[in-house]
Length: 329
Image 1 (cartoon, rainbow, N blue to C red):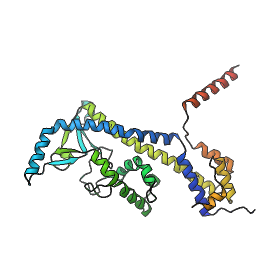
Image 2 (image 1 turned 60 degrees about the vertical axis):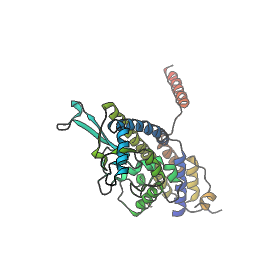
Image 3 (image 1 turned 45 degrees about the horizontal axis):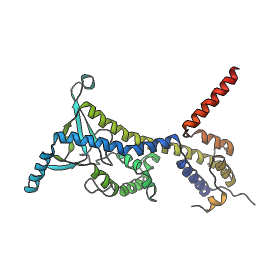
Image 4 (image 1 turned 135 degrees about the horizontal axis):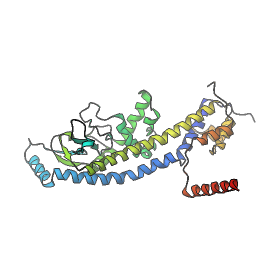
C-alpha cells in the first residue's frame, strides 16, 4: 500500500489534534489556572461583603432610603445611582506618601469587565482597556470554548500582533456571548447576571470618582489583594495557553519537515497521542530540520511542566537517596 503524502490540509488536521491533546493534559500551568478560577468567586464574594460594609459607613441605609423617597416624590431629584466600582482610600503613612499627596486612593471595579489596574476610565471614549476583557474570557473560558463562533484565547493568540479582522471577529463574538458589548446600561447574559450581583445604591453624582470612600489601611490592602487575585487568574490563563501555543508551534514546525502521513502518526504516537491515518483523513516550508519522530517527541515532552503528585515526588526522592547511598558505598 502506497504511503500517503502530507499536504497542508493533513498537516493542519494533525496539528489541530495535537492542540486538543495539549489542552487536555494536566500540566502545572493548567492546574494553576483551574485553581485560580475555582477559588476566585469565593474571594470576590468575601471582598464584596467588605465593600458593602465600607460603603454603608459613608452612606447609611436610612439616608439611602430617604434619598430614594425624595427621588420618587420629586421628578427633578436624581441623586441615587447604582454602582459596582468605588474609589476607596486612606491616609497613608509617611513612607507610603509622595511629596504632595497624603491620601492614598485606588479605583476598585467589581464588574465582569472591570479594570484591574486601579485606574478609573469611565469618562474615556472607549471606556475599558482591551485587557479588561481578559477576566471574563478566563473565568467563562469553558462556556466560550463551547461556542463555535467564540475563542476565549484569542487575545493570547494575538499577543504582540497588530489589530486585525480575525482578532476583531472573535473578540466581538466573545463580547456578544458574554453580554458585554451592549454598553454599561444594556448588559445581557453573563455580564448582566454578574454585575447585578455586585451593585449598590449610592448617593451622589453618576461617576464613582465623585464619591471618595474612606477605608482603613487594612481594608484597603484587602481590596488590593482581591484585585491581585483577579490579575493572577488572568495571568494563569495567559501562561497556560502560551505553553499550549509554544508546543503547537513546535509541532507545526516538525510536521513541515515530514513528507508522509505515517511519519506524523509515528510522531504523535511517540508523543502519547493515539491517532490513525484513517482518523486524520476522515476528520474535519522549506529550510526546516527533518526531525526523527522519536527525537521530536522527546523535545516536545521537555517543553511540558507536567503536574507531579506528592506521592510521585516522595518516590522520586527515595530513589534519589538510594542512588546517592550507592555512590557513597
